[in-house]
Amino acid sequence: MTRGTPAAEIEINEELVRQLMRSQFSHLADLPLKLADQGWDNITFRLGSHLAVRLPRRQMAARLIENEQTFLPGLGPLMPIPTPVPIHLGMPEKIFPWRWSIVPWLDGETADVSPPAAAQAIPFAQFLLALHHHPGPEIAPRNDFRGIPLIQKAKVFEERLARLRSRDDFAGLVLSRLWGNATSTPPATTACWLHGDLHARNVVVCNGEITGVIDWGDLTSGDPATDLAAVWSLFEEPEARRLCLDHYRATPEDISRAKGWASFFAVVLLETGLIDHPAHAEMGRTILNRLAADE
Image (cartoon, rainbow, N blue to C red; front, side, top):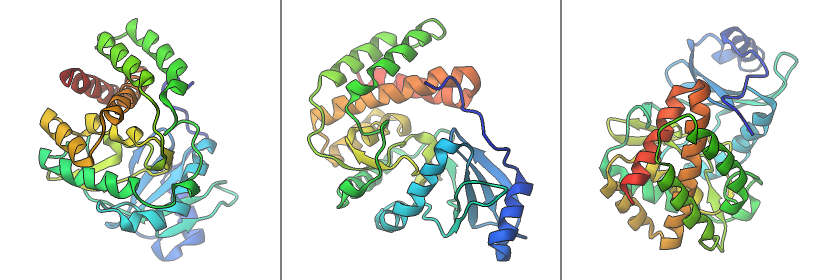
């Protein structure tokens, strides 16, 4: 179980990216290059004005890049919100042992910095419906951590929750109740395509409008409640959260499990963020506050 942000297993800097570009995509190698962001699994550089270079920063994430390269070309163009479908597929070589991608740059800021307007509740629900109703979830890559019955996350949840109780002031009673309700709710009976990691830092917003959904490495199939949990990460207004879930036609059971997944993501973000990532900690607190407000 990860404690804090996982360390990068390879130092990835502008010079390394330039070398890869010169070797494989020389026609793009002289474009301006600037570090844009990095998360647990990947690092992203902006390339020129319209492109981005996306590379895994550890072995475990290499498979996630391959998931994006394999499945986003089929899924992405059918989504009502733009996705960074890979344009060029970077191959492993001596200086960098994993696959990497050149993708479109999506303008805007992540939703933790620039939350979507309440009016985006229905467009976001339409995005979820398009993804979850896309045919063929049986071909989705396996993921042992997302889309699974919540009870399988109980040990991790309870261990992180116990550590938080000793370190941070938060809505522990609300969380415990939501988690208990969610794990006692019958599991989903059908599986659908899932983004799998749908939180505020993976949604791009410009002037209040959702302009992109990024970071598809965890895509899989399973319980749609995994993605529905995003409403507590994205929307500030309770009415927007209700509108999104209503438009999706989420059942009471869906909502109960979604609150459980939101509780899980909040605990992970807050517990790990307090170690070394203040932005993640703030995201966790935000989700907790919104869950408490809806009780």
